[in-house]
Length: 386
Image (tube, rainbow, N blue to C red):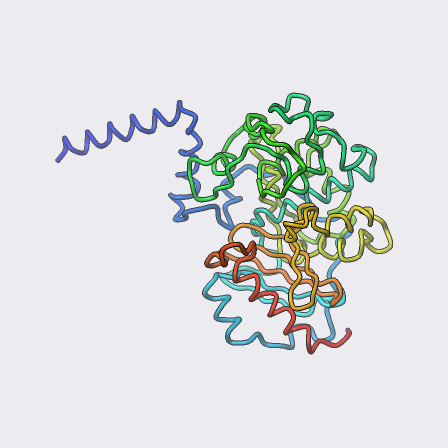
């Protein structure tokens, strides 16, 4: 028996050593941070296992006003069962810019941080709009190579910043979250993410069609950082986060602790109330308390489909026409959602551990999204003006 254990131990040591010196050394990091913590994929609290850049609370925090009917309703039994089954940790509804309802589960609360995953993509797109407004970037048609001249591929000279924001980059990328050997999985653990992104060439003609690729948003983050001369956390804080009055300190994961780059495609850890602020900003056409933080024409363009054959996506925002309502939303892995119903002046935030099963073939929206949209519309029916 001792001999068997020795052989197994030696084999494991060889395997670990081989991984360490191979292109798959990041798998060791994944094993320790994901699998050995009892998870099969990235999870809500995994930011505690990674390096982060601090996104401070606003110098002038602005609490959401409480609606006159704040927390006077009860959720339906069906919705509560859904929350329990899917591991909801935060459910919040803002009506007419006032906090109408909020409830937390699984030990989470008002100030609990939660990894938002791809919700961050909409923040990065907002930073693009601000960089254009500030004159760092000329417009959506400016070439990416003006900022990243080392970008490679047969069509590298054709891709624009607008192509990146609308997921039409033509970049080589395999968007697989659960495959440990995919570039998406590797990106989560690599210590030099920028270099890995530059190894993904622009191999197809950009600007022709929508294809969701996380690496494309990271490339956009690289452009913004290069154009502004600031890291994304710093630029987000000074242009949007601080003026919008964020109440709690938040975090943005970086690829390494020293001079690292934010994972632009994901991983702002914050709370439900503060995530809702950017939805209000877009709903109000870029104005916050009378101050223009984003150009209204950029927002209008962002919230329209670029490609008629892909009506579900604009410029890093998901779009849905549902039961006569035009909805725009931020979406993240495991079911992180910030949904905005602009005509109803309604914002819903849901954060949680699972989004449940996949949707029907050809439907870009999972069944849980319809559950939350229905819940929002049902809640909205009987809300009075505060």
